[in-house]
Length: 101
Image 1 (cartoon, rainbow, N blue to C red):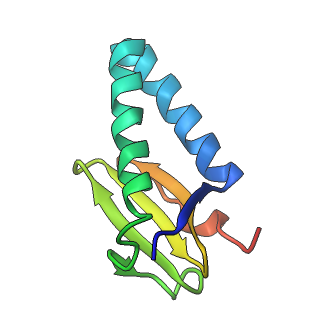
Image 2 (tube, helix red, strand yellow):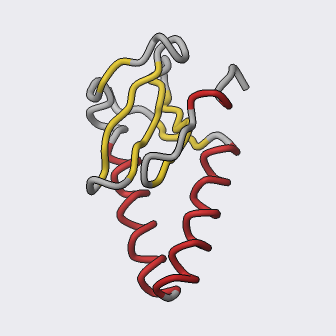
């Protein structure tokens, strides 16, 4: 079953902040390319969402996967959707801000 991928507003804010950080350090082209690859990895979860490490200790149903050794994608598999909860760059702590939106 293919699920629809949705981003929580907090995950969208994570992507925006990451874009700004990379664009300032390395240019907008590099930032756009990197974010495009992250978004592709998120969209790929529609086909095979039952992967990654389970993190029920943080939030029921939460899973995490690594991306290119620098990013953690936190998501939940729901009935018909995959909910992207957070995008954490370079070991940024994301657990404390999670809750049932």
